[in-house]
Amino acid sequence: MSGFLGPNGAGKTTTMSIITGYIEPSQGKVEINGYNVSKKPRKAKREIGYMPETTPLYNELTPKEFIKYMAELKGVPRKMRKQEVERVLKAVNIEDVKNKLIRNLSRGYKQRVSLAGALVGNPKVLILDEPTVGLDPKQVTQIRDLIKSLGKNHTVLLSSHILSEVSQICKKVIIINKGKLVAIDTPKNLEAKTEKENVLLITVEDPENKIEDVVKSISNIKEIKLIKELPDGTKQYSISSNDNSDMRKEIFSVFAKNEITIFELKKAEMSLEDAFLNLIDNQKEEPEKTKAEIKKEKKELKEKRKKEKEDKKIEKQNKKTEKNKEKTKNKKKGGDK
Amino acid sequence: MWAIIKKEVKTYFLSPIGYVFIGSFLLMSSFFFYQYIFYYGSVEYSYLFYYTAELLTFTIALLTMGMFSSERKNGTETLLLTSSRSITSIVMGKFLAALAVILITQIFSLIYYVIVCIFAKGITGLTITLTTLGGFMLLAMAYIAFGMFISSLTENQIIAGVVTIILLLVSWFLPDLSPAFNIISPLYQFQKYPGGVVGISETITLLTQTILFILLTIIVLQRRKNLK
Image (cartoon, rainbow over all chains, first blue to last red; front, side, top):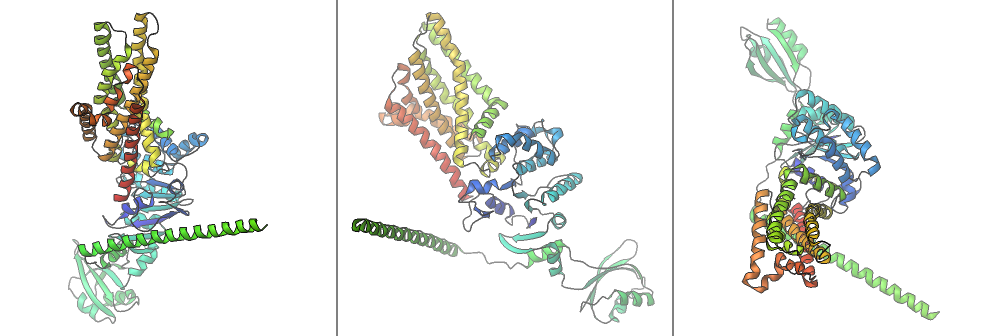
């Protein structure tokens, strides 16, 4: 169960299109369960269930007909087809609308029909491109639970820009930006990595405005910042320290002595969202390639391919000559006999 | 491939296109039938195909214009291209589905032949009718392949339809300019069949045109995969 994150235009959908064989990669290769998508597309594609972001469907068909068609396209054997269609209809819970035209279904149902299309044939790898976009909260939880349960016996690659969704469902997060890989890790590790500073969030009632002086008297404190003033007269501050020690105890006692009332005191935790933003922002801006550079790269690639071709040719010829040698040897042997 | 044929034929008849195509074709055929057979009192049924072939030049675009353009526009192309079917079988499936619709139309229009037989008091010119029908199907194949190719180039159905009709019309009239154009005009190639002549060169030309445009369609789809 992997989550695939990235800002808009990062290349999530493009990557998924390449994995599913919709687009041919210009470089590199994709292997699904050992099958190269470019070289053995039939076998590789049979292992994949793909739910595209735009949920393309045939509006003139009913969900049942659509899923049956998808089953046929995916090569589900005729005997098992009916059973398989029923199973999938049940799995995504659209049995009640199975005979309505897809055209007349609501967005949530369409999304589920599209998901059903990906599930049919029980492929080992599921690739879901933003499966919960545009659903109401109830449907979102339903689809999420469904995806979670699918994760038990399928490999799922899920793209999303809803971070809470990814941190809830996925065990592993892949973050890309501008077509480049930024990070692969578990959501927890990513959060931990970005948690660099020891920061406290504190809400106080401080009519005499003593807080800044008071805080300065505590050792280890680096700085205090006012975040906002709340309408009920309280103020929220963030306090950062120089080391990793827990300052809460000390702050509590010192504030109490100075008659500053604490309404709230908590450690600021980095969420996946912060981690995400941090990673994306930290990615070094690469200077735009000039036209000459692009040309050069293309030339190099061409030459590389040419060389590869020639190498292959030479290899073939070598094999041929070896074979011929063996043949002549065998003939000679035969002649000797 | 069978799955695609089935679905495509079904789609033709789930949308108005299939009915409009068959309906308009039969309506015009019956008009020609009335004019030619009754008005002139002729019993040579196969001559009617001269008119229906010209009619096909205008109506074929109805069947072919949406073949790939609408799939591309709706994004359903993704479903086809990421399924385990090869591009060749997708293209052939769609081609054969359109051909099936034309075959259905022709079976309907055999009614006219039956009427002619009734008036002629016996079966007349069966072989000519059958060879002309065969020629007509060859012509339809060349037309479908061409329309399919145009449809694979754009994501706009209307453009695909209009361009198909215009180019087919051009190919219809080009032989008038110079005999050199005979070979690229499917309609010209068809002209001998209603006379009862099965020309080998005509048959080969029509088949070549069909195969050429089917291959071009496959190449277009394959190339687009690399160029996205």
